[in-house]
Length: 250
Ligand SMILES: Nc1nc2c(ncn2[C@@H]2O[C@H](COP(=O)(O)OP(=O)(O)OP(=O)(O)O)[C@@H](O)[C@H]2O)c(=O)[nH]1
Image 1 (tube, rainbow, N blue to C red):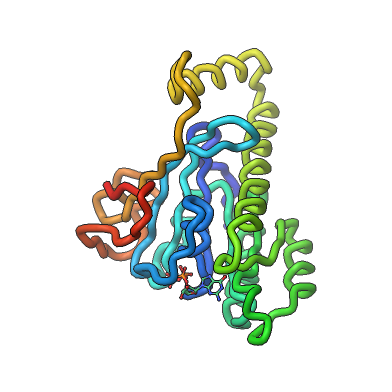
Image 2: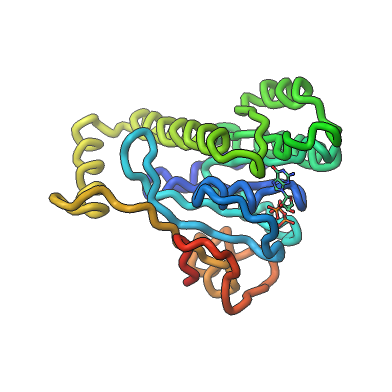
């Protein structure tokens, strides 16, 4: 059944990072948010990052859900929770590409107006390549998704560029659809001013980047939208092991 509603026309931009196991979803998310590459991550639960990022030159609350491939009951909830999707595969793993392809097809059917970015990760491992760039790019094009190949391990800048541009597009699509829903330019201006005021105060300097990490246990999930209640089985651990200083486990 087609479910094309956008769950969040205001509030934080919600982005779900989807993909098969071991393709580098966590590495990519953390690389983007902290500029660091960390080799190993816990992989048994979804991670929700809440942060304020500069999107198109202004501070924008963003929530990024780094989904866990081992939480196999969650995909339906992710599809409803997010307004934009980053679908990751590894260029060294054909199976992960098939997974990505079928996910993109599902997004086309169920969330046809959502912004989708298809990312082929691990491009540094050219000698192990199983997925040709041209094939993946053409699949993305067929589904009107953005496409890029990156190496999260090798370099931060291309990852940052591609995700910055994607968020810019998500934001502009949201603003566009809000306009179509009758929001006048004047009202939008007021709400942006209010948002900036509450984020940084009238005379405060711009906010320093700060990211809150929420490891989604049963209780946290129940605080999110109803759709999130069907997320993966509870797997809370007392502390998060990322050694990055901007992260705060809550
Ligand atoms: N060579 C290379 N290795 C990478 C790259 N990105 C991630 N990795 C490695 O790939 C492995 C899996 O990375 P994760 O970020 O844990 O992958 P994931 O998709 O979050 O995995 P799950 O949690 O199982 O869903 C780790 O050993 C990473 O160090 C990359 O660009 N190049």
